[in-house]
Image (cartoon, rainbow, N blue to C red; front, side, top):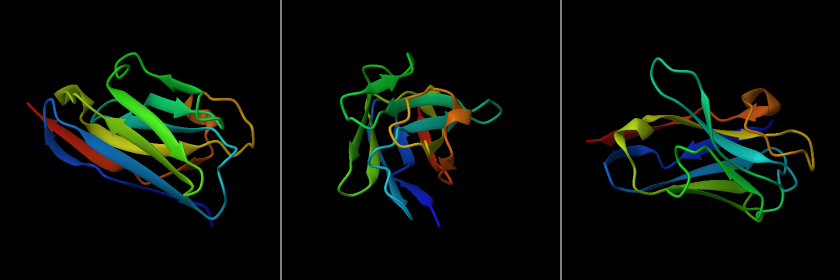
Length: 126
């Protein structure tokens, strides 16, 4: 059974940092694109950052570019999201997602991802 488990969320003041982790089990995602999405209360789920099966291929939403960094450790089957200079508008539930196709393209579209974690809450106070 494939599972994606996020961790690292919490409450932080504006300007602070958090590092989210997404540990995958049940299959290897070393050759799969993975991404982070978020959903704020009352809003639709939105793309945050993605990483292709080669770590050099990354893509960010304009709202987080320069503040967030996505990375992966294939030896640990884990993807990370380093979040710096956090703002109150970053408050949301953050979800990890994995594309089920090997060597599949990196996408910012949620429907392109086959596996999802349960989400981790990030709250940024002003």
